[in-house]
Image 1: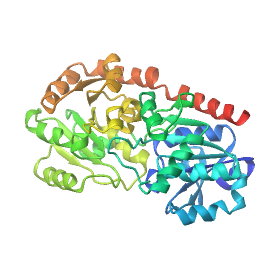
Image 2: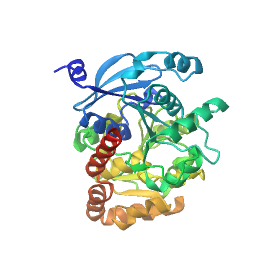
Image 3: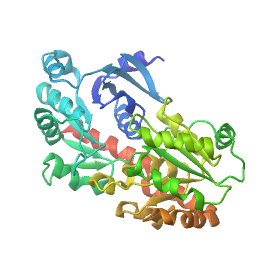
Image 4: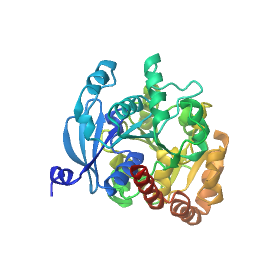
Length: 382
């Protein structure tokens, strides 16, 4: 059955606005989309630059893509189009998408849900920088019937940012794939990277800069055993070009450094490469509020745990669960990296089992997906 046929059979429609097409296929969006599809919604995804098309974004999850623009004139034009009456739900991520979702919901009467993937506080600026956009964003967040947030430790930050009252409804959903599996096998990716069986491989994935501790890893190279390899995989357009140039040069000088630049493939395929690794590195050094309350908001942290890979992470209260489940080691400085590696390597089977246990008993993606579907269903009945 084609995606068009499947869409035609669904009698409810949800419009989901993303900030950029680069975000297509993120773990958080898989949960939102699968929850909507389970409730028989036709899901239309909107982001700048998209080409209209029906597509299978995740295995078994068909959506329709549409372009949108985050310009005031585009929004005004949409408020005059009666086609939006057909949508029962309007969803948007932070920050600009919620301005559009909120305005369309207010004008055409559909329910509004905020999908809070970022919180722009404490000097961390979003894209809604002009006064009227910031106003529309906050109005959209305030009128949302529910906010899907990636970790409950961030609730008070979102309340402060959006001006939400104490009775506003929040539902936690982690940045983790639930029903989407990673592609290929560990052996496939180790062969692809030319890794030997005795190479203990550390993985540094995603945004690569001093704020995510890339310099910690580089500075630790000379203090790590020679058989260790470090896989650097900068992600998306947010990668620091200077840091990427340093890593590219370093990989040409030192065969312990594997540098895989850019993310020209899908989110799933890019993440799958990390199956070749043994230990994940997750560092958030920025003092800005949301980065010190990462918890299950971290795509890469959830990815490593889904792969049963132990983690070395920068210490913050939202990561305490890693040590509680013996899924990783928390550190406060780059000097601690070699000892943390040794600690995990010496009891690797136990730490790997702890990571797997943490994924199933603490993250619990399937249980959370069911809760998300139930919460959306509850909204539709009110």
